[in-house]
Length: 169
Image (cartoon, rainbow, N blue to C red; front, side, top):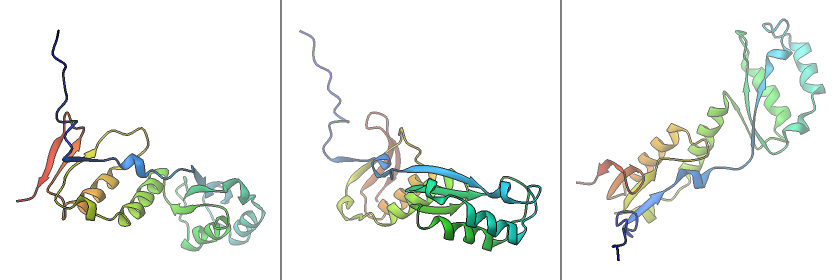
């Protein structure tokens, strides 16, 4: 009878795996490009722009995270993004200026700010490295900074192949 192989590292009860994917906020993400509302894709004419905002069906963005951007080389005044955000506010979960990646970064930053580090005091932590959802690199940095002041040690990856990042002296 062959000996059973037991992964003692993975079964170590002293290790706590912190999986950022578990904090992933559900909801549709969309980009909104204001370029199409610019004259020749480059010039913002205030009255025309305001008419576009007023006549657009914003209900299509119900319960979504929206990233506002302009894909042309146009210089967009700050009020334009504010005007679009004002119209989106009753529908969207959150509006940011930037990319879909910007949405993920901002959402994770907000979530991590509200995590209580107390349960991780003097614990050995592995920040799980692989995920099926778009966890931005900034989220890994933010959680490391949140947990490092209280943790005994922090590693990155999986229990079987973790990379040491920090050990309290």
